[in-house]
Length: 44
Image (tube, rainbow, N blue to C red; front, side, top):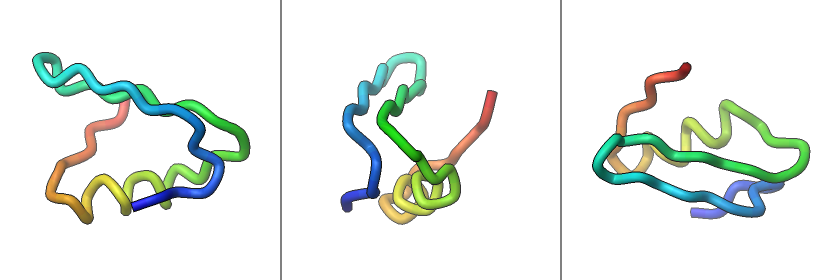
């Protein structure tokens, strides 16, 4: 799934942390995309 504005994503599977970067990011769209593939979101 693609989310507008996202330019790069890095994921550390051991810690469970994903870093998303880009321009004009829509937090809710990113959360929906991640949840749609079966992962939970825990915001910092």
